[in-house]
Image (cartoon, rainbow, N blue to C red; front, top):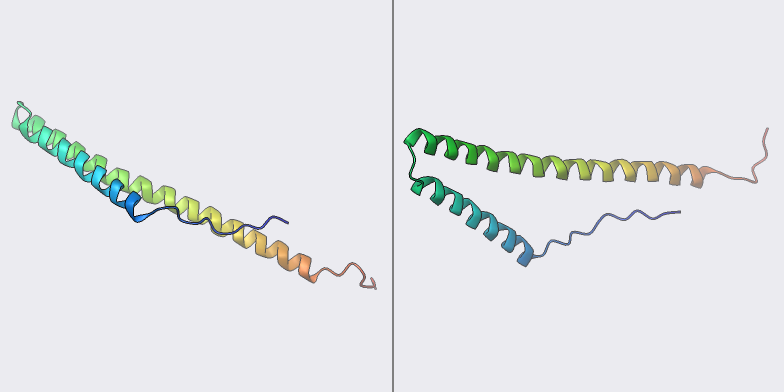
Length: 97
């Protein structure tokens, strides 16, 4: 029987810091690029709004992916618990009446 243990988190503090710093640097870079771009204000506003939507949709997508993975894990654990219960209750030597 397959033992499905929960996946261990491989996220270390250094990895989390690297991800946060790279996100901050890339966001700062696009904000500075939009601010100093030699274009009309309406183009600058459009690019700023698009950047805001991109960042918010990235967070939403990451949350949806995480929730889907957690949901699959919970369903898998429930199915495994049902099979374990059926196997524990099964007695092949019980007389059939």
